[in-house]
Image (cartoon, helix red, strand yellow):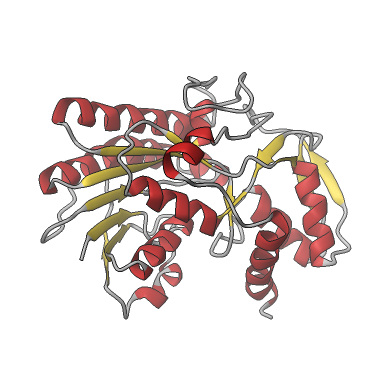
Length: 312
């Protein structure tokens, strides 16, 4: 039975990835320091072949026994988190990646890093291909996250070239679904929480900036395909269906039956104007593309948030 170590396993994506791998017959060791993760996300996995270790991965990682895959998902991932936790964000991208790579090297395991579309910054290329080097402000408030991920990619490639480690780099675009935190700060959970409470829905800027939203089950399918593939170069995983922030806000208000009104606030510094993945490589090399429609994915996510926000 293949054994997988997942850092950040109690987070939104990490918990879904842990569950999906267990469903496919893998043994999973989840590591998390619970800085932004939540044990409730993995409580239902405790009776399965799942071991949880509470640990800060910026320190040496010790796992007994054989390991076949190391998936490094630990990191604050929302603007609220990395603006409040700038140094831990940089440390987990640098030191945490180094320690996770060290574990993979020691065990002879395949390594995969969760990178992000944020490595493209406020892109001057649209849609974004993996060959695009990005437009990032290294000293802006978002730089702590963007540069942490860019450094993590560089270190991952260095381990592949110098140590001949089998490494994978996935660049994740906006993902949504159950287990996102109510106060996550990202668009979908923020809009849903506000709409369900009939509060004003806050849109930053004029709402014309675009994002491309991928449902969590589609993302996880792409991640596992990449993990099991022979590909080493970065691959975008995301839904290329692009829409404006105002459009997604209005759709969520309509789907929740909310009486909320949209209010506009200043756009945060260095907030990307556009975001859309070119998924040609994922389609051709992994045979992957998203399957869950926005209506279906939002419906499932609204059900989750309704239970969380309203208790019903």
